[in-house]
Image 1 (tube, rainbow, N blue to C red):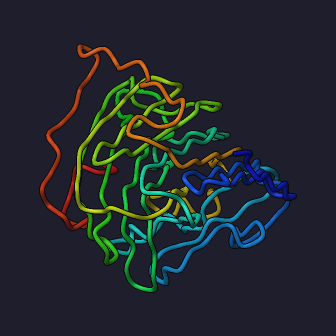
Image 2 (image 1 turned 180 degrees about the horizontal axis):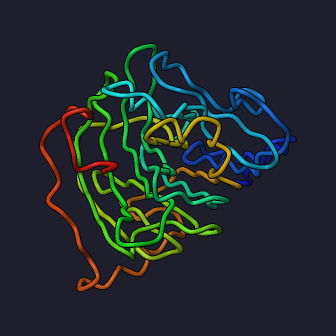
Length: 265
């Protein structure tokens, strides 16, 4: 059965007539704060920051200077109507990588949000390419500052550069994160069965350095699609990262952001 294709000013949305998949793509034309693109993007969390767009870039609105649990008020936006098995990817825009800050770009999977509760899987990388780079998978458990590590990979092979494509997928209970088609992290988790793809943006800097620098990094494009079947439609497994290049630390079992010193050190 043929697909129904709808073109909009903000992107391309493709709905399968069979109802088993959905695709959305955007290059973030125009300017909006918060990001909406005709009501496609949502953000219901009162305790977290929003995503905005301008100049073809989607970026966050955090100050980057909060402390304690408020430090983790990541900016995010998510879509709706996707099946449980899904993948999403975006092209990184990194104009000013800053080793004094933690600049992170995030692909979100099975994401849900309400005023004081946000859940789902956050798959992200630091916008820096040196030995302090990392790729992580974190499960958001609801309240602000509460999360669980599922994967934590660190070192020179785990950072984002300008133009890199950050991609994440979830099929069943398996979550994968890739950069430029190379798998960087993998985890299994059975907690969340439903939700939608989206994007996130994290900024944390000391001594006020982060204020006003959200636009220094973001996404210049984004695509999400539902996956039909156990392998995902026409989606071969990416090439795995060589085992000898992995420098993972053991994921923490501490579920409170403010008490977990692994993330964004």
